[in-house]
Length: 176
Image 1 (cartoon, rainbow, N blue to C red):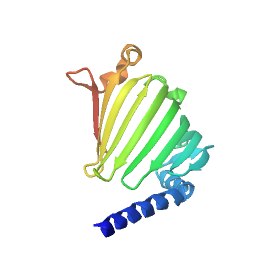
Image 2 (image 1 turned 45 degrees about the vertical axis):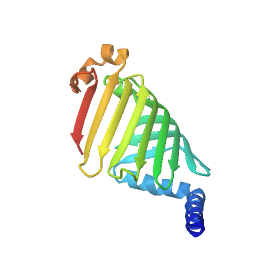
Image 3 (image 1 turned 120 degrees about the vertical axis):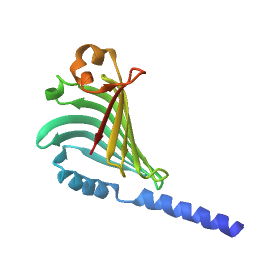
Image 4 (image 1 turned 90 degrees about the vertical axis):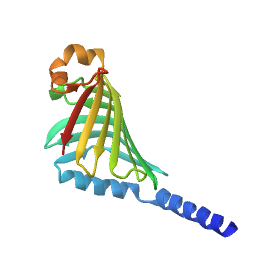
């Protein structure tokens, strides 16, 4: 029994040290190259490695050369079984003002190998609160939005393009 406990402790220690010393900035640049294939460019960002996480600040996001968003802070935590990306203080481009409010307080993206076919996303902003799930196996995204009063008053056209559920949430479902 002692041997099994030692083996388990050494294994956990090895995995934790592997994650701690992993070159997170190099993986970020690899991820950025992958995004480039989809015409998504992140520029002017500042990177800082912090043990088990990578902090990215002041990132500008361009999609197909169109200025899309400015993200004040991104924190990426990569663990062996659970990964979390937290985006804080997002300002969308002014070109989106006719569709949605421009300020997003926070967005959390979660992935766990305990449920490897699902990516969960939730967020809060001037639009209200949302929760989304993306199924990797089915290629389907389902978004549920609890709109704010601002969203209900000024962005009715956007809400009309979503399906309203019985509990007042708006649902968007699409195969990608």
